[in-house]
Length: 102
Image (cartoon, rainbow, N blue to C red):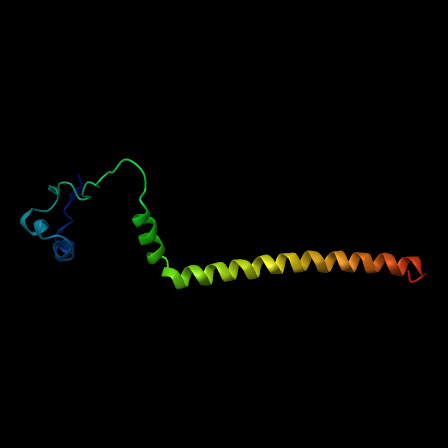
């Protein structure tokens, strides 16, 4: 429950625009607004496939999923390519050391 103190007369117009019940109350009285946040429905059990599909559609749909997978694939290829490059660079360094290119 929300309880608010009504502001002084100088700010009463601003307060009445926020909630109409405030206009009926004298300055410095407390107003009880009741339950501001409605109770949520609670379900027990498993999450159904329909819920997962709704979640997927809210996140961009099938196209969004494909774009996400392509970007993840590109990122993984980038990581592998960086590791390969460092390994090649290191093996090239070993070849030059053996031939007096210090």
